[in-house]
Image (tube, rainbow, N blue to C red; front, side, top):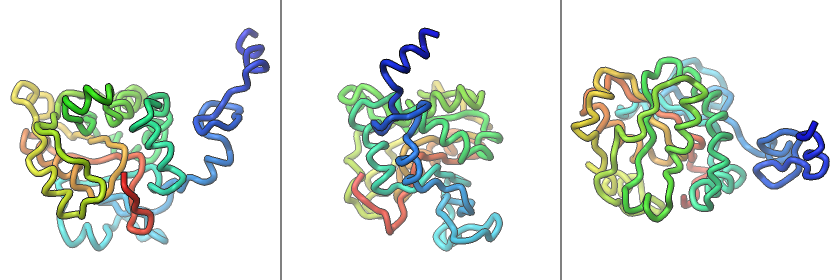
Length: 239
């Protein structure tokens, strides 16, 4: 009764600021997000124009990635970008539960086989400035929803790499080369396990590949990837 009365006095607001009947996005904002519900590349999650089965795109066929499969909830474009940047740079950690719900749907097949979930780590110096790691903020509620072990400290970023924004694919790979590791004291938590890696955005895949290599080197049996949004060449923007 009290909750209903409060709703009349202070109508609920969606994450995008518009009025909403329930928590989440307004109907208008929701309709603008390009969710990747249709057929996608089994290797990187890139959307296909039509269903061709569990096949991989030309890029994934041309070179093997250290993560075996990837899924994204939506495209990274002008409509999803603002929400993601609010979580990343504007202390809007309340958005993490929304993104976790998106991933629980788009990456359900990866979650079903995952034996542990690991967020892409942030260097300690950057974490001190930002106060939170957006990938960890997404992974935590995702694990609670899916009932999977959450390993926030299984993977560390050994050095504070430059921002990946504006770099070429080659430049991004060089920037994060050997930047990630599984500490010896936490190796036992990933040995023999199928690990789901979680991040906010997939661009070239350089960061995810660096993380996956470190997890595989530590003994993980498989690494898959779930991201909130993925960039396509058409929608590429600085992140």
